[in-house]
Image (cartoon, rainbow, N blue to C red; front, side, top):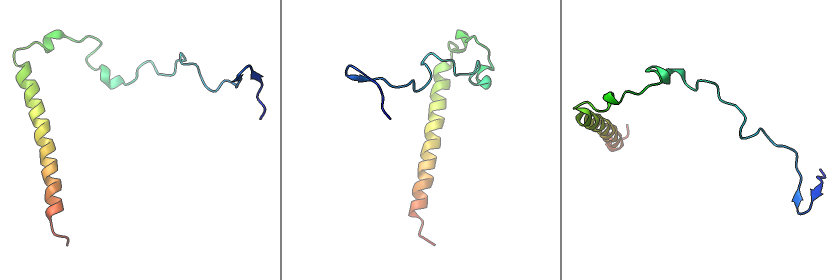
Length: 80
């Protein structure tokens, strides 16, 4: 295919859509809008927010360690 040249650059045909083309639907994920558009700061400022946040992190860590222990136990089992 012979493409016309202009100076040092090769002129090529347009290869896709513009970066500004609208390609997303109006709502990306409708389930994410269950609470509405407003975020209430009071939800983050209640007195036990730190304890609740830490408890959630500890639960996640315990779940991870339980999975890791189960995997190590599987590796230690003799082959049947």
